[in-house]
Amino acid sequence: MKKLFTMMLTLVMVLSLAACGNSGGSSDDSQKDGASNAAESSNGQEEGAGDEASESDMEYVKDKGALVVGITDFEPMDYKDENGEWIGFDADMAKAFARSLGVEVEFVEIDWDNKIMELDGKTIDCVWNGMTLTDEVTSSMECSNAYCNNAQIVIVPADVADKYQDKDSLSDLSFAVEAGSAGEEQVSSLGLDYTPVKAQSDALMEVASGTSDAAVIDSLMAAAMVGEGTGYADLAYTIGLNSEEYGVGFRKGSDLAAALNDFFAASFEDGSMMKTAETYGVEAAVVEQ
Image 1 (cartoon, rainbow, N blue to C red):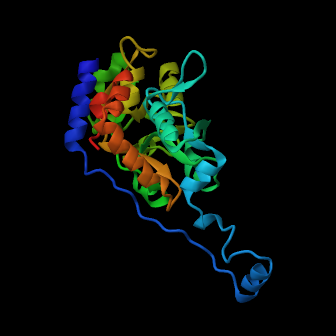
Image 2: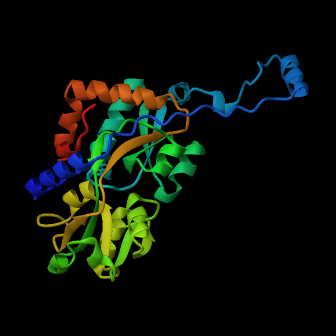
Image 3: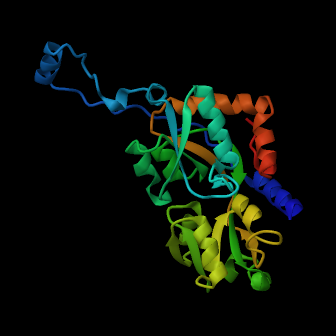
């Protein structure tokens, strides 16, 4: 299976578009009127003090001593070990990035469909969970450079997989997809019948239980969780619907995105990024920094 996954990721990398760079952004500071400015000056406050939009995200995270990372349960990127600790390629890289900033890391499970609201509301500081760099993501967040290649893959019961080898064959199937995901975007664009669920792992359970005919999930998750030797040995992945790239999202205008790009470049150069990727079997997907 690992050989097949490596071949699949190689094809994805050949077909991938150029990596998404940081999406530019600037703070939307609101100006106080003259009366307010005078009142603030009389209280010994500087003009614009306390305006969260003008605050450096780097300083904000360092002041509170923690980088809060929004995730979902998504093996091999973010998932819990037998001790209940979050591990995975993304989780381990997030821990290392937090250490480089001199802060702790905190992982918070989020509703994926609400990721932008969670970020803007400062309940989390970044979204780091195998997040596809879609137009919605890059327009709403300050994104890191791409760090992994990926694709959206169709999952069906293994005993019928040979029937579903092209997009035309999918028209009569009912799909389960994670709400707000790239998988939902793909099935919607194809006009397919689908039910949104909370997580990609839930989509797999829907197919395994027979509640849905098929699911669309990330290729990296499919390689880790579907097929012989996995928890879903009776399921199989068939066709890829697209090629895409993963990035990390911060608040619009955040200076943490540039800091993460520097961290990615350094960890790729010293080999630590690839060593972490090998731990979780995703080395074929890593994008050169």
